[in-house]
Length: 203
Ligand SMILES: Cc1cc2nc3c(=O)[nH]c(=O)nc-3n(C[C@H](O)[C@H](O)[C@H](O)COP(=O)(O)O)c2cc1C
Image (spheres, rainbow, N blue to C red):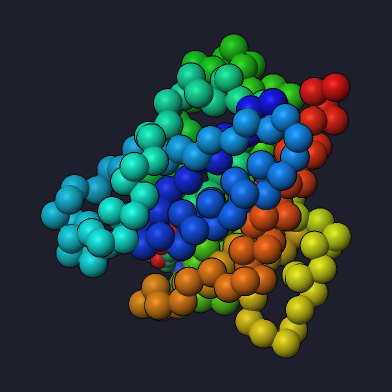
């Protein structure tokens, strides 16, 4: 069973969440889990101006995803930062290159799941995940979220991301907040939950 974690990240918040998602998926027997980045569309100069150069070095070793790799996976868990309440353009561009495999129905019946990050607490985490689901449904994927069985999303004693739609983190307006323990636990839960359901579908 192959689980692919495909992400885009500028300052490393989504990368940190992607690692936690992968850790959770690996807990399921028989799961072969791989991390992949989608292609960057910004120049090094722009990334430098955005103050992202150092953060980018921490995940530059992660291979860039190809469309063919999506076809060979049994489950794909996508991670994207919020951009105005939607997925980022880099992820959109990558997905818009999947027209041919859509025509072949190559992702039909595979498990799809989404996690996200936003600067602010109510800055579009849920809308980013839900609007992402539309693309996965067009591909015929079976959508898996983050059930309330992950009790950490009930917490009100601290600010936290996470909703029934998927794990999320709040990065802060300057990107100064990295994912909390509770948000990482949500990501691990989601990864494990996706792999568990994928194993059941495969059998
Ligand atoms: C063009 C642009 C649009 C953004 N839109 C939002 C938004 O609508 N709501 C929000 O809370 N954060 C928004 N952000 C902040 C990013 O979501 C935040 O930097 C990101 O989640 C950090 O994750 P990363 O380090 O993995 O890139 C935006 C950032 C950019 C550059």
